[in-house]
Image 1 (cartoon, rainbow, N blue to C red):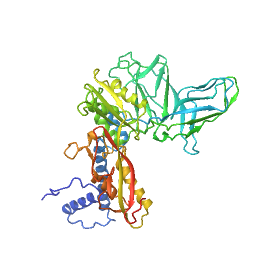
Image 2 (cartoon, rainbow, N blue to C red):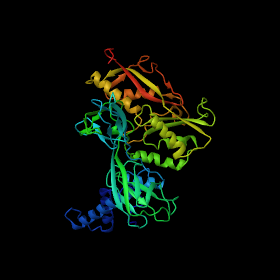
Image 3 (tube, one colour):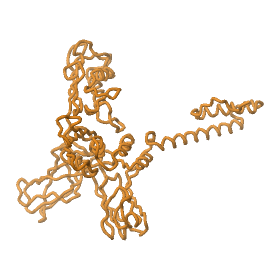
Length: 503
């Protein structure tokens, strides 16, 4: 007689299941053992084995899941798996803003604010600090006594290490969160430059590699005198920390500069600052879902930009770019042969700055070289505004304000660029990518889907069933979308189905 049944479920490995199976096994082997009370020492041993089996099963499942990029959940493992594909997740990126520096009266002598001067927001708690990235100068007698300068949400750091003269030295930086590409290394034998890896480094190349861990702490790695030279003497590391989307503060928020100031003749001056425009460019580090989504794409493009999709993938490697679309004459008859238009959407939406467009062009032509004869132009996104109007009947107990808030929240969630986990929201995309279930272009925003979004809002009992009781851009039909257009939510116009009044 078989001791174990032939139809075992090997996925059923929790404590209770293992205990039950062990008890069945014991009853079949030892039919005279009938005392299965908890006080019996044999039951203690049985439960101990069930517990060990439960722990081992959990550990094996966890190890299996964490060994694959599609199932891993721990950031440390995601980073390690992405590194196998040659992909490094983005760290925080600093926001920048242009501030106006103004003196109360024209200065007697020349006045300067040095690089690194700290300014901050006016919030009493959780204030956000910025540093000047260039010298701000106001000449003696200038009237009006004002100038502008760029500030960055970062903090400058410096650490000094001593080389042991041994190959493969590694040093860990002390401050977090590290900002990508901000590290400058100078050793006793000269200045070192950062590379992705040492594969192309010769014995004399002064190169270093930066590895950022799950806590955004950076480590510096040097060569072994075969691939990359060994640094000598004192090693000075200058780098920056900070960044994040929280620093994209509104206009007028950067208004505090602490300390007392004098011109170059020693005369005291009173300084005020403000930012006329909103700070921009601050992004948070890549989420686990973003890494899971973006890392496999790097296998397609490697270190070049050739195909149409290569331009989109490489552009989105910049953390400040959320979406990208490349169009050629194949997708848009208005584009010239052997040329392409790259449309980019910055993180958070809106219109990209010229600085960001320049960075995108550099990314797809210099950092990841493209075909020399192919001309690329980076353009602002073309937004298709979707205005929603609906005649809604409220559920009992909900006010008009509650209903509007629920509908606007539901629509905003449907139109948002990114999901809460940082992955791309698949509801919205460029018109070129709107496909049906069979992969065929649809060329439209589906009326019925947005109808369902509003209908499912918490406060909504139903939507009216008369013509135009639910309309997109004034029509109760799908909205056509062009290849290069990207849908965004416009106005939301609501009418109370019971009273007939707008709210």
